[in-house]
Image 1: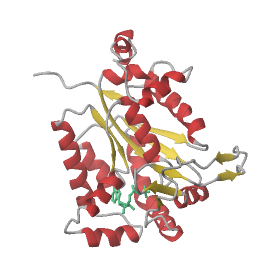
Image 2 (image 1 turned 180 degrees about the horizontal axis):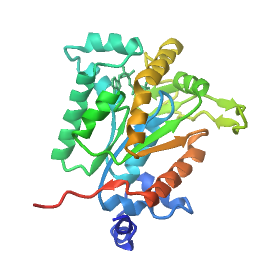
Image 3 (image 1 turned 135 degrees about the horizontal axis):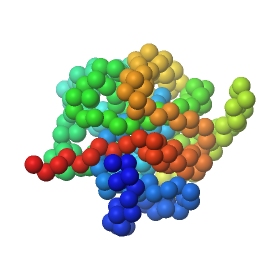
Length: 278
Ligand SMILES: Nc1ncnc2c1ncn2[C@@H]1O[C@H](COP(=O)(O)OP(=O)(O)O)[C@@H](O)[C@H]1O
């Protein structure tokens, strides 16, 4: 099956795709990650602490693989905007840096995945879900996860990244304005992540998430270690965990990430076969 994914046949079917695909084509020495795109279902989850860049990389990989990027945090914020009956309670939990009840988030994710199935989506890249071992076990009942990408970055840098997050209140695009340049510890290389430069149309319209204060971010990091680290162990035991150290800005990290995904796919199969027609 692995060979089938890397047959030339698939690339012959490649059509002009989203920007991410062209970006990928410009990066040399990658092999043919695009062959993955047309030969199976993508059922991947992205794990990692707040601020690590899950959303950024999940959205880029989803673009490349032509599947939706489903962010649990975005689903939650959409629910809040809709003014759901539980909005007030949800907001209090979020502002305390805590996780919402498993049942609540599961309902949101199940509804989104069900909708995707009905629309014929070829899978998903989940970001911010699962965040507890119970959520991971519940997800198993819905879909087989073939890759859990675990993005890692030093904790002091994560705090700075969260505090630097901004969204344009008009176009909705996210930018990280943190200027990270810290010496490596224990022989690790220096971490340099320059700030992003928003276009002039967005400057002056930047908004910060109300739960991105230092106090709430530190609480979220503590909650992650306690409740979400077991999710890493869950996928490690299933042999689908891929650890990836971010350690740099997007231009440096993105090609490294594509290479890591490509190499991982050579090792083992990352895609679910398409369901056979009955
Ligand atoms: N899988 C989940 N389980 C429980 N609560 C969640 C989950 N995903 C998001 N939330 C809630 O929504 C908040 C915002 O989520 P998100 O934008 O993913 O934050 P982060 O930047 O911490 O990754 C979380 O702090 C949490 O309260």
